Image (tube, rainbow, N blue to C red; front, side):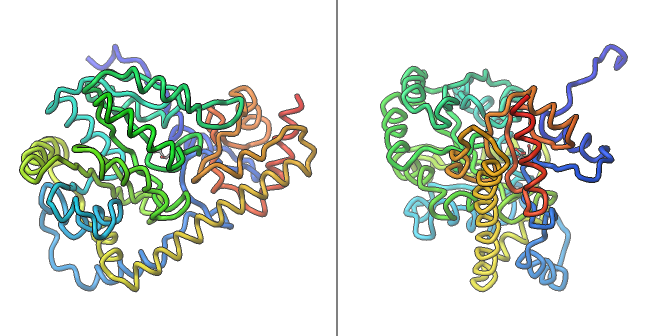
Length: 398
Ligand code: LMR
């Protein structure tokens, strides 16, 4: 039966990790997968996480199953982080959260819920978007369409085109937005633009859904949820897939969450019972370690403060690297204006490099960038910056 299968293409992001690992060049530079690295190109375990793990090791009493929706303390802390501690939505029991094995699983629960439990059969994604979005929603059965988002000439949001596409989306379809740090472009709507998008959503009655994978990597924990909170407070229904991979550095623990907001407590309760049937028939219930770490930190004021400080260090290092990247490209003699890179948010920079240039950088210089031209700025360091920029300038001149 299996002999008729053809080989699937490698994943455009994770597939690169294998090729990078096999590359024996000493000066190779990895700017592909969206993982934070410090000045020594190490993806650190945060001190706050280490402390929480020590606590758990000492105090954990049982390895019995978690409930289908995961840890109650994790779920409430997640709602508070996204919607605010005093959110009336939480007080009114309109919000339900399920702990999930990573942001990807949260997106998949969202997709299965929409396709199997609601009338929504189509979802609209930004063009461009994280490549796995298409796979996740398509695998669940949804028809996947795109709305215009990015203006490559001006390295900015194509706002008029975006609004005009959103105006034409039929009632009942779902529309996915990146809560912050848009992946791959690093360009987010301003607060004023979010208002305008919300006005279209309200008028056209399509369902906005959010992927919030980088809270804290843009302007800060509060600044990065301006759009999500605006929508949550104005609309009767919303779905949010969030991730703790990046902001807690818990990549391989797989910690994320699906948050559902409904018009009232009763509807929220019923809808969430359907979410739980999806989880039960998929992975049954989530693993506990990562969720326990997050819950312990977010519910302990001292550890939470330490975590916020560590998150700030990560965010600020990326911002410094953006500035240094632009400056070093200039020093190495580029005649192009790369100043737009400083204005982008989060880990990624949509560089404008073509696929051909990306492949030359990979093959001839050992520099790994995603084919779309997306660069993980967090992979840049004081040590590799000069070589990186020199190589890019040479390739641009070809
Ligand atoms: C990325 O975009 O590089 C990250 O979200 C990792 C992934 O799973 O693709």
